[in-house]
Length: 254
Length: 254
Image (tube, rainbow over all chains, first blue to last red; front, side, top):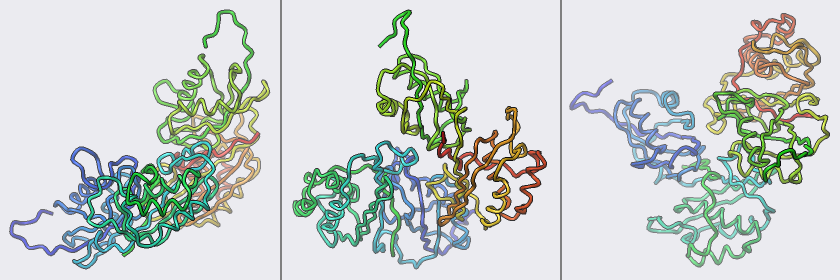
């Protein structure tokens, strides 16, 4: 199907929920010299719609970060019912990107602006030797982890705070105030899962929080130091950035 | 450390338990023109011991098959305590092969001959769209799976039988009689796990059994047909071979 010159086509607004294994990609957002998820997704949308489509994501995940529930929206002609779109895209996308759902949404909807909250998970492999099946999906961190101390530290982050101390340089937002709604830490055998929900996350904030809480778990920092770090507004006071491979954008809530 | 000419060295017998993600490998056993786990393991053992070491595995897993508990034995000089061996090897092995343990065993021990039983798992991803994190670790098979029928069919395989009908051509063993001790089928959300234990498995027998039980689950075959297939001793009567990526050698029992 080719569009005719001068043709007027009503574009509908679509919301896609996407899962991906981020291992092979340089993050979500388009880059000139590196392979990204946005580039492949837009390439496949172009094959489906025979025209260039730009997607707007709820959040730009970094290189190596995974997603079970990344959400994007895009405008395109209504050439098929929404439930056909995942099938059409999954047929041509690489195996490590899977579209899970598509919906028609009101024209005003924007995946980033309208997100009420994002749920992330972070996986720590606490076994002596790495679990070979989690090499790309967990941070292998051996050593006794005091989960109670980590939970105490995490509780100090709940609520509305200026999270500037947890923002990596390179962040360009106007306000560094964010609200963290919940933070759960569970252990099953050697696997420690951190699951947290907030209204938004600054550049590398999620991984900087995890790195800092790992210091607390390893007794390199006291849980109460979390409050001092927050108050300092200084990135230098927090722990190191936890590796990207343990992080997964689980869900975006609207 | 180099060995001197004419030196007499007592070789000890070591048992290693190894886990690997088989995705990148052409199976366990050494091949001239393809990368295998045995080749990399022996290459790393050579670096540790400064001499050629040959390993004997409990079973040769096929291309793409995984392991959490493959077991091998090899003879080598006692240059370090056994608990140091996994550390020495994991430092130089690729990330998708992890040695989990090493033990000194009696000289007469052989990983293949002395195995009393092997436990395998097979993972079926029964979701409508594939779980992106299981693309290399499960067979994506959508459709209503009648697990009760599969369990019924599997129960007919328990005990001592001639499993010739489930052996792929290329098998070269003298006897095709094997004993299946247990066969469990569990479901958790979209993931169906088949866990089975036997005294030995013929060439592709595990995957041929899974492929046939999948036919039963999809109502393409009746559970009772399993008995007829066994009795036929004819590979042509069983279902197709399930993909390698769902299979994992969980444990070898001695």
